[in-house]
Length: 122
Image 1 (cartoon, rainbow, N blue to C red):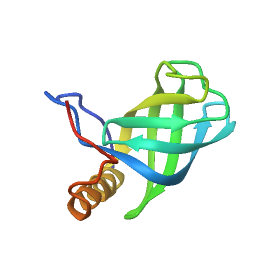
Image 2: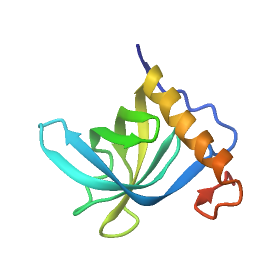
Image 3: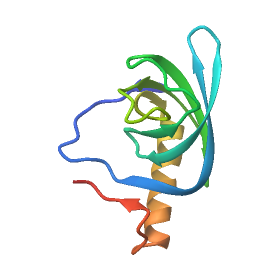
Image 4: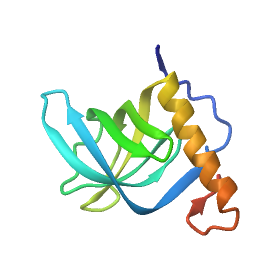
């Protein structure tokens, strides 16, 4: 079942900075697909490297694969931070996708407790 995400976090969700290139595909409402690379991810959103940024507020479907499986969710594109980097916010994730994403983040943190790629909540 698909649930809208609730923004009830009092502090930032743990983030994972990905060391390797993690391919991602964005699909816009008009069916256009844009390839990208996922750089940072959390259960609330992340940062993508794109050939060309999208308009802030654009609603997309986002697909990428982490160690625990594929993640597919709805996302809103936020203001770009450079000409090729753009953050996004998940606005919907299936329960199973959210669990897989949480598992991948937790697993990476557990395996590499002193890893500098980890981005802790501020």
